[in-house]
Image 1: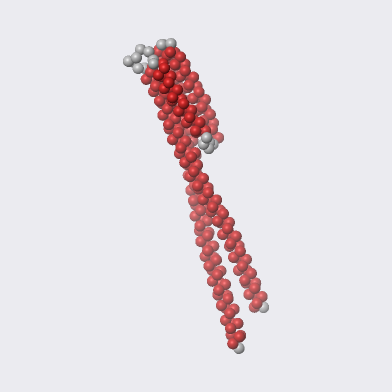
Image 2 (image 1 turned 60 degrees about the vertical axis):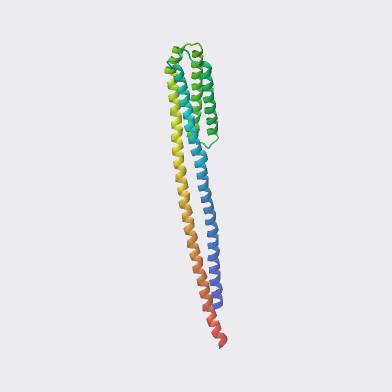
Length: 229
């Protein structure tokens, strides 16, 4: 009877240890996933938010640069006519840089709203180029007043709209970046929970080991007394 009880007791402890082992493996898998999620959040923060935000800043710089070039050419009181070739070359350089930055931005991870705003920005940039070509065409005919009139009516509005589109994209960058931070914080808290569970399981295993050792000593003492008799 004692032997049967001992076997039953050992089977119970063995089953508990097996369950604890399974829980430890599951916790380890969840912890690895949590660490992977944290890493992905940080990588996305850098590649899809920090770098594109910097590109948006440079894109805005070049948009402002084009506006400055046009204003400098149209309202320079020291010149009678616009240096058409120089202006055309400088605008082409700025547009090449802008196209490169937009193409680079497209390669990053974009949410639905961000994709929509980027498409609108690309359309606006095309309209701005058309406006610039019109100004270049009028200035090539040495009609500075006509070129100025076009800039005042369409040019300033076009640049203002482009700036607003860039501001909207920057706002989305900030919002998505904050969401990534919240996700990483959640992953960190999950990792802490998993670590606490591992410590709790280690304590339970320790208690079970002590129980097994104690039970073995209890069984061994009566057996020794029986052998002495």
